[in-house]
Amino acid sequence: DSGVTQTPKHLITATGQRVTLRCSPRSGDLSVYWYQQSLDQGLQFLIQYYNGEERAKGNILERFSAQQFPDLHSELNLSSLELGDSALYFCASSASAGGQPYNEQFFGPGTRLTVL
Amino acid sequence: AQTVTQSQPEMSVQEAETVTLSCTYDTSESDYYLFWYKQPPSRQMILVIRQEAYKQQNATENRFSVNFQKAAKSFSLKISDSQLGDAAMYFCAYRSARDDKLIFGTGTRLQVFP
Image 1 (cartoon, each protein chain N blue to C red):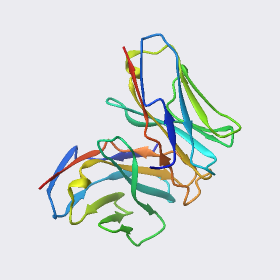
Image 2: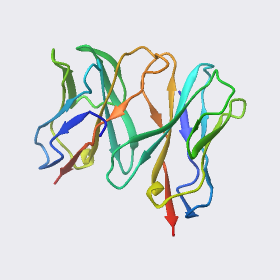
Image 3: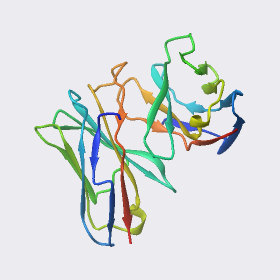
Image 4: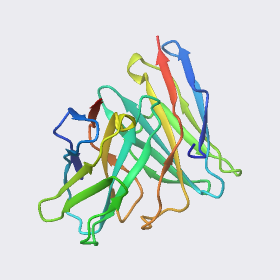
């Protein structure tokens, strides 16, 4: 158990819908990351938040957005869903940010999103 | 842009034997970190081992060790005394020292036979 929790574990929805994925980081961690794992794109970095502020952006679609709240939990919002958005979405957390040497990322169990 | 390549989609090993998984990467940076993550059937991503680019000594964690060749941009993982529980997908990952995002390879599926 990494200490990172994600809800829900599974989500099945239809095209065009909007969903919210939730992540609670390890106690004391200030950075939260979102990654997408799909069959065709592999594991891709989407976005990072550090202490409530957006820190880095990767290959995140405009239909996707995220935020980190004052209690440091994070939500990833996916809208106008398409079949190709079906994937495993991981949240990870780490203590700090800025390329620190021992800023290990600990991954949550993931949310499996299926778009029908 | 940095890239990570794992050229072995699948590997297999007999229990108690040794297996080496390959990884190469491309970067123009001199300061970075490299990782191997394990993803068992449960889908949980588990950090196996890490290597700092500025360290010449290869990292070791129990039965897991790496062969880091900076000039060749190669970072292979050796698993000794393989166990059934080692069966998983293994991902090589790169992280710049300037930021925190992990760049993953496509993974190698390791099968362990009794």
